Image (tube, rainbow, N blue to C red; front, side, top):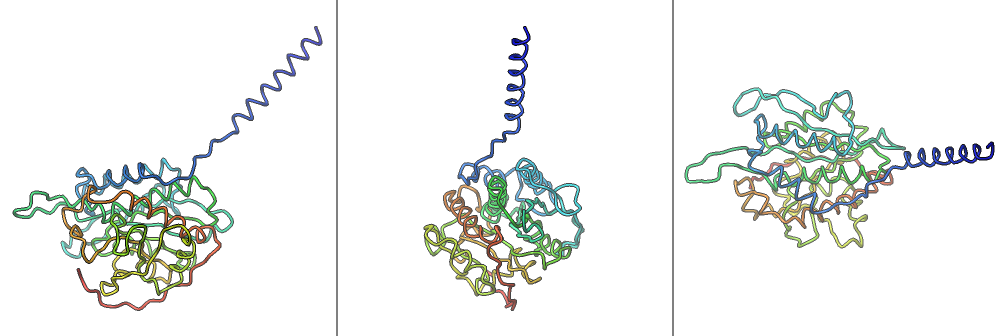
Length: 332
């Protein structure tokens, strides 16, 4: 009887150990960037239901909630002292003179050995809203390329780096508001930071069309202003994807997207783009819809950004601080 009791007791211990071991086993999600997820984000953000995402409208509020929910699903933390993912503030629209309350949406993936060193991955989630014009049937400016494509990149990279789990530096994933009104959201964000802690800014703007350089290429604004671009080029060697300096220097694009708000503080912050902006018939038009974009271009560009910046995020490379000299922009 004693022998039987001992056997039963040992079996219970073994089962208990096995159960506890099984409880501790965590299935790690594979770090991938796929076109299915990319398409879901892009088509949702550029849907007519978002009403063109103009800052201060119900449409952009829908987009904000979508981004918030994705940050929560991915498992990002909130920023600084914020209770949620929103950095809310009020500003006066310089055109209408009306006060508008709006929010940047910020998610944090804390780093490991270098958590006090910060990399920003950003895009603006606002666009032009609804503009009714005589003789124009479509009044919703969906902003699929400008810049639902960039926000799609931010969301996809957030999920990718969260699954990868090896970022030594802290990554802030930011969807900026009010870019179309004059870099409002990113300027507000910049006022509240210690720029010395910010190592790099990775901004995504209009990444849905094949550039003039051909397939599997992108261009970077302000290439000559730091060695950020050269680091990315080195990391992309042998990948089949190439990064080029901005070919549209006369348009002064370095200062026309949210990267500029950090760059003015000395942060090596640059914008990745694929858009042939000099010939893009959909730029700031109601025709900028999801169906006009190439999902392969968007997906491969996001992959290239991930690979090209991995040594910065891992802490291996630190870009030189940006050199500023603003020039008068030529409007397209």
